[in-house]
Length: 340
Ligand code: NDP
Ligand code: MG
Ligand code: MG
Image (cartoon, rainbow, N blue to C red; front, side, top):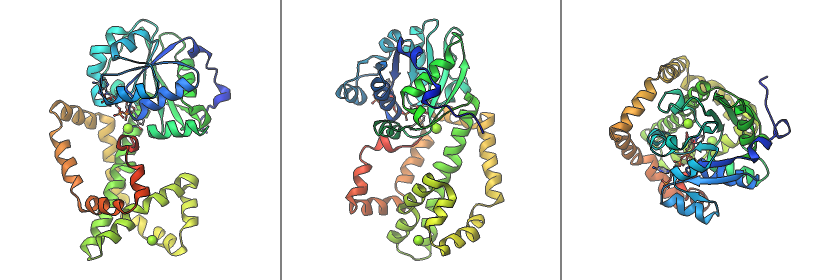
């Protein structure tokens, strides 16, 4: 099995003498900044004036402009939305890099697809938590952590690995396990996971199941509970103990139906299309499409987003969740529940 590192394998001393700038204070940014600060490191947050700035001040962290924070820091973690990173990097971060600094990412996209090309005299590595930011924060507060991947792109100082591991320990990942990867592997597997399984695959499956029941004349409310709401219970069981644990908890009838019908839904053809999706990621076709879409101000993205929000499953869901205040409460901080 791949070597997994934990807190006792890691010496964080190398990071104690350094100043860390966290650029961005969204899902990941707030979690990294607060966890590192509480782990005893010197943290400054880099932002523009706005919602995140106010929140960071409220949380008691030191906040400066992106340029000032980058200038002051030795280790600069970029936790801005991936699409905006290249231009903010060019304007405010690159001019403030010094030889021996470390440039850090939580996702390999911009380095792997050459959207950011750092100078040769800085360390470049990634520390990518395998979970949404709100969990990185919540588990840390509970004394646990979210596992993370680290990977080195450029080791100008000879210390990149030590700094990366100390950083990962600082955000609490050493309590859960830290694995080595490369920018290529992290980028391609992350994009594939979210497209084929976690986000794209799941939402398409849920919608198709809902539509099938509604088109057959069943009540949309019943279809919503069956195909969307209950998914949480199933996912919790998967998370806790894998497929076997989930199948242990469901009825034998459900388990037999799983064995018989699951492979009829996701079959060899589906897998062939998964391979196409993976191939578009590997060749850079997906990345290029997304970069162009952003350059054109996202016309297709916006149109699809609007259409999706008007789907019947969303309308029914909004009504039903109104009646379940315990569910609604958790969705209030919308940004925090967005997985990546
Ligand atoms: P968010 O969208 O949650 O946060 C964005 C932050 O960037 C906000 O604080 C926002 O501030 C700030 N920002 C946006 N534009 C600017 C600007 N022009 N100048 C200054 N600040 C700006 O990002 P995520 O945390 O989702 O993603 C950050 C990185 O982490 C990405 O590389 C992503 O791939 C990676 N990642 C994310 C995961 C997740 O759970 N979300 C999981 C693993 C990796 P404002 O309020 O001012 O807009
Ligand atoms: Mg059932
Ligand atoms: Mg992602």
